[in-house]
Length: 445
Image (tube, rainbow, N blue to C red; front, side):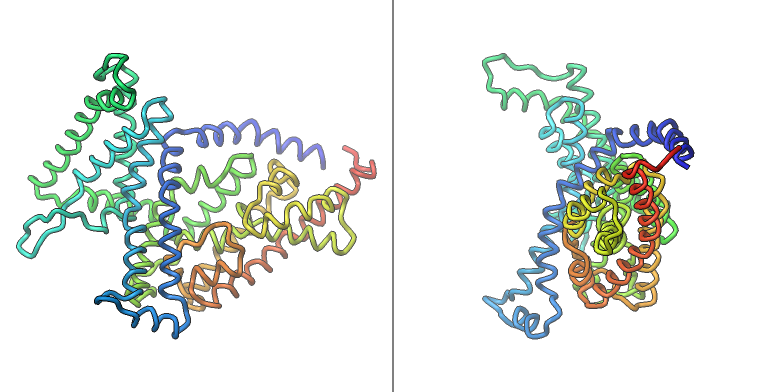
């Protein structure tokens, strides 16, 4: 049995590990991850005020709605803060993606990010009056989650062109006596002029050809194929399985898989937020089941592989005095971080990485979570997530309530957690017996 495990691990290391490593170091994916991560504080802050503005206590919501100063209520202020943070997700993402991609090529990330933001504004249509007269303003819908696809494209193109010009020494150089900040500004002139002119030409083509705007075109072209992967149960199951498989070979699964699909999840999250604020969040009004909170708070409880069920199963064995010395040592070291969805101690301490004894439940548990959660929400047993992005370190049960604004969300998490424990327990028991034999010196090839 041990020999077969070694053979399987050799296959994984030889054939799967190189692919995983290449994907995890692919610079465009890293740039997308960094850009979206840069916007996460704004998303979380906006989520806090979304929760505050809709907390399910009637006395509270009535008070903030009826407490008005100079025509503006506290509820209006909460909504403004939410829109002002969620509403620039695409813009901030564009800056972060261009900055990260440029910095990976050892050039000035801030300058590349600023140029990318300018290009983003160039291709974004202005707000129009009733007689189609442009106003000096940009609509939130294109600066926010709906603009994420364009943010990714512009960020990568701007960052790529910027670093190419600088690394090929096509720039204006100033004397050494000039302060570095001033010199950097002049260095960015040539690549900046080329990039902004390029996207100005793109805007002109769309305007003169009466094609609408590039945001809507790209959204319609990409949302279909990517939606099949990020907005359907089958696609989500595939994404969840890939996440677990990458983690299994030691690669951070979220950094590979989520970077590709998270724009869809975030767009669905923001669409639900807008429906929730209008009081019409349901499937009939195009509400989305699969969102970022769906993935973070219901599928991956405990982290990748839904390992909170695993560490609880280990704790059960310890409490029953049937655990190996290794598991007895690991139980307190993995349970507390696991409650807060931090599972690196479990991944590399157990270990789960390249451990053929645990690969089946590691893949199966989050897949089952996705199926049960999708089913419960599609049958309207549990409300859709409200658009509030709960911090990923928020413990289950509490995060389910905050994500759905209902006790039903907490109950669903509890059900998922029980199922995860039952999935992991027989495999953990078998692995525990193996460890006890090893510790007793009785395990042979």
